[in-house]
Length: 259
Picture 1 (tube, rainbow, N blue to C red):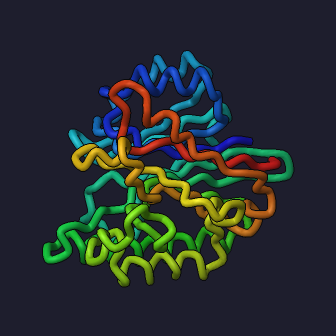
Picture 2: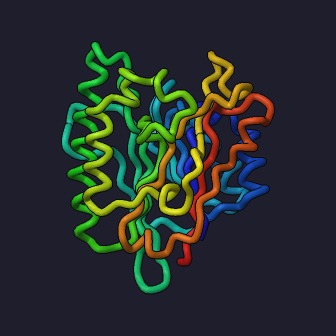
């Protein structure tokens, strides 16, 4: 089974690219972030024509997440519990039947948190604390669980071409690192780091011509429960997609599993 994450940075702007990539690669499950559309605006029919079931948790103009799956959805969860006043569409989870049980795949678009001297950084940290409680509950189910998406976290210096440039940024602040470690310490495995010591950049900024200078960072992650990590066979960062015409600033990251 191949499970991928991709911050598409606007599904309407990248629809052709998305359809081309799905047709070429044909992953089993794809989690999208920043679809930037309400549910009715998602190109459902076009994606379904490629053999995918589609579930979305959209929002007008920004945020928004979606899961595309060749497997039928047994259950869908929308939104991160713990704050009834939070209206941002940043989490969607699907449950799928596999041989011997079920697998949970949770797609997240974690808040950026910048600027750190605004309300956005406390929101990011509080969101991560809610996420930790959510993951604790999922781990108690003792099922294969894959938490993936745009985490807006650079976990370590190896994950940035120029880590010194990110000191003080919400993506690289000690408070953000501490909460990312909390997730991992629950028993979640960073899939790429389990199989590779290469940087594995997943994002190159448009404004600073990051792609042209390979000034990248790794902020798109797959975190795996023990029962998912045991089945991990490999991770592919599809960095070639960043070189396509009018790309997203992120590229797909795919995990391959022996399910």
